[in-house]
Image (cartoon, rainbow, N blue to C red; front, side, top):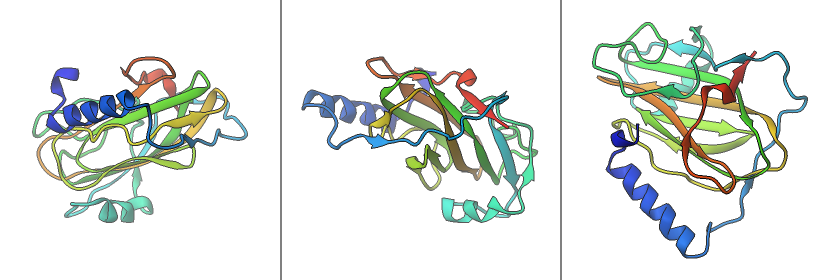
Length: 196
C-alpha cells in the first residue's frame, strides 16, 4: 500500500519527521475519551449508512445525509484501497456520488501517545473518543494529509469512532494507519474495529 502514497503523503511524512527532529510534537497531546461503559459483544468491522446525492463536493453537503441514510453492509474496517472506475464505493450500491456515515469503535491495546492518519478519496472527517482527529475536505485523489496531532490514550480499550466520507467521481478509497506508542506507522488491523 505504501507505494500508492502520493505527493501530499510524502510531504506530510517529511513535515512529521522535521517536527520530531526539532523536539517532538508542537503541542500537548489531545486526550481521547474511552467509551464508558465499555461495549461488549461487538462484531468486527464498522457500521455504515449510505446516502446517494445528485451532487457532492464537500463535507458540508455529505453531513446532510446523517438522517435518512440507508443501512449498508458493514465495512471490514478502514481498509478499502483505491478501486477501479465503475467499481462500487466501499460496500455501497453505487460507484459515484456516495456519502457514507460510519460509526463503531476503535480498540487501542496500550496506553500512551498515538498518531493516526487516513487516506481518502474524496472527503473525510473522523472523530475518535470525542475529538476530531482527521479532516480532509473537498475532492482529491486517494491521499493523506498526514497526522494532525498526538493523541493520548490513558487506558487501553474501545473508543467510539464516527466518520463522514464522500466520493464524487471515478475511483474511491478509505484506509487508516496508526502509530502506537514507541512504534512505527502501520496499517490499522481490521480486528481493531468493532460495531454493535
